[in-house]
Length: 404
Figure 1 (cartoon, one colour):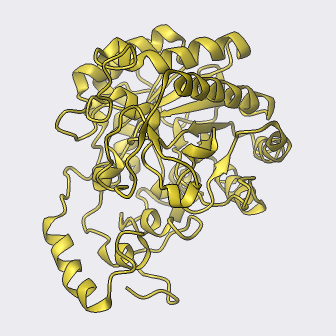
Figure 2 (tube, one colour):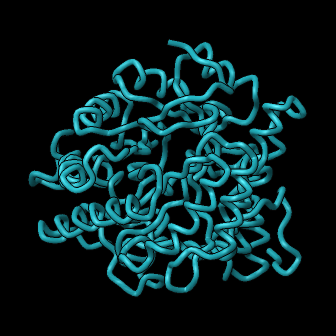
């Protein structure tokens, strides 16, 4: 059944005013202990005022060794955090907007220099980008502890009043690492076959459902990850069916891992200036070498194509394979494409992240007819500078206090 963009809609029983969702992105608006700040609350209120169909928060961590290496990640790893999140939820609900919390463990895509703890992963395979640490292979006991901490986080999310929770199975974080044979080289019952690689996620669903019943648990998953021995669409289709069987409420379809960062967050031009100024791998390189390195990076770093709607074909295939709602994200930035996806391609919802950074009220503009395309230029400075600063739009310009 096809739909229209601005009609009220149900997502896993959650009432949305339209079919455009704010997708999760790292916000960097926690305090030193991982509690949400007033700045984060204000961000979500701006989104709610802008008539977004639903908000999916930036990922919140479920335990300390899985904390993001980026600036000021929120955490959901203890009960004392619940009241602060409940205040945010109540504020967003005043505008009739549902809010879903994304939770994650970053796996090997973090830095022990940031967490102060050993980096962990399904297998002792070094990440090509976060290459400082050789991650420790998780033991059976470690895996079960992480499963239980995901479940505890789901319970906390529900207690805080969020309308649902989203498990982050994409972009090379821990649960994504288990699903991909590129990062999961295990020979036991947590690796090898698709069923074994999925086992951890299946256990999270099983144990969580015992605690929260029919509370909506969504996922964000890769349809493919760009790695030679990694996730491909055929396996993603099998995993989507497993997710539905486990009780997954909806699937948001994405792609890629941090090792190939531009595969997930695409743009015309490599953000080399921002990388040289802010990224831990490049910012301490002496100036003369940086001057040489920038054009080299621009020449040799892969620029994936297409730039727009790059997960749509995968989302259509996944939608045909399951009977639960499917959300598509990735290079969606104009009303014409959104209408085509919803009205003609039979994907249930669209989600965007970068367009909401520059224009939190973009949905209202679309609906009122005052604008049909995002002002986002896809420079990706927001993603790079997020290593040191809270989320905001830079429009391809470095802050004056920083120089490359």
